[in-house]
Length: 67
Image 1 (cartoon, helix red, strand yellow):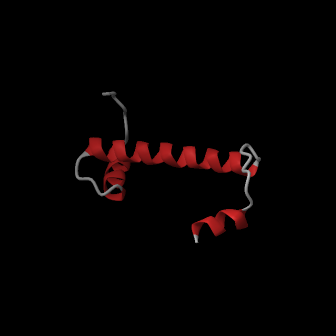
Image 2: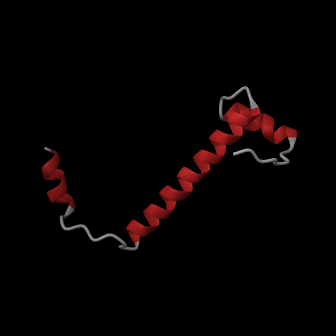
């Protein structure tokens, strides 16, 4: 999907370096994708801490399955 976004040139240059991309579009795409992944992981962690999931086994039982 194409969109138009006004990003200051110095910020875009920094972003390109951070994302290791020479072109602007791939740098922005990578950054947005990474942001979304981190936001989803953060929300999942919050749900785990709040007990949103009911696991039938203890951590010790799960570790024994891996051995």
